[in-house]
Image (cartoon, rainbow, N blue to C red; front, side, top):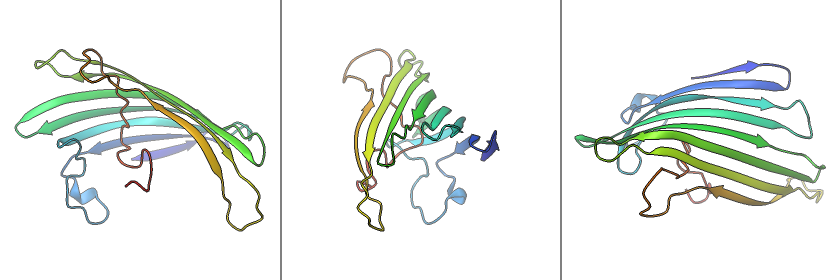
Length: 184
């Protein structure tokens, strides 16, 4: 469920809620022969919501702010693997330097906890994401509008075998095209 509130002519606030179960086949558009929320071999029940603010008041510096909450309950076989409560807070800036040059800067932090008791002590979630990109749009006088982007993308992660908090970036509901549409 999504609702949009127009705060001004150039600023809007989206609010959304999501509730997914592995067997919600009646909510799927098109053919699907697998669990809707399958991940890591587990059946996931997920719910959450968020707010996404888009501010285009300054043409040279559009900005977006967001907050997303997600609760994952992972059911695997008879037992249950740890559930997660993840909060994501982020900001995206898209400065326009000229007709040919623009940039994109995004940073976000995740926090929350995992529910692993009584198997192991609960873990705190503390993860980070950063993206910086510079785009050049040459004017070749063609009908198409080619562009070239150089970017750096950072996602925090856990060190293998390291005990302690969960520092892996969680893509929340973005399961596939995180790195490339072509790889899918």
